[in-house]
Image 1 (spheres, rainbow, N blue to C red):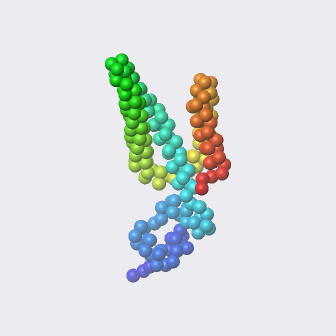
Image 2 (cartoon, rainbow, N blue to C red; image 1 turned 120 degrees about the horizontal axis):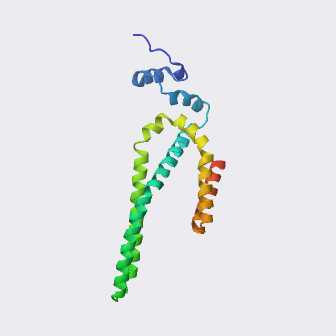
Image 3 (cartoon, helix red, strand yellow; image 1 turned 180 degrees about the vertical axis):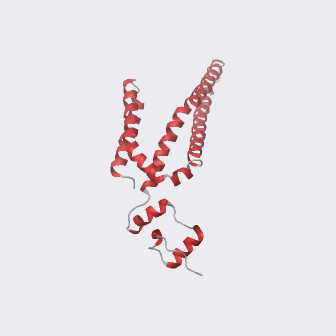
Length: 189
């Protein structure tokens, strides 16, 4: 029985490890071939994966924000119904109606928000995981190009909120922009 051929990408490995890998998996994938030299040199190899996940996260977030408008309209209709109920109850002399309506509104908003976030995280994570794992290096390069656009869109939202005199929204966008800029400049821990 002859020994399996030594693949250049596995030349660093001990012969037992190399033989096991070839028998178990055949050949290394492109990310493994490109990542092993960095690992052996002591460099971080999670940066491309993180960048790829960020790019996909931005796309899923934009999709969620766009398609979330009908959900917000639906929630507004429920809140208007709750408001009409509360007004009728207060007119009938039930003083605790306002507290019950307030609690129901908060519970509904929280439940809808949690359910929506969970659905979008699941929809963004489960089907796209294999794609991100396979294309992480290409997506990482794409994220490097998309970061200025992402910050530009955020700045446009900030200016739009400021012009519309929605100062709370402008403050939130401003804080998010500063946080994003600090994360990009300083990196994540």
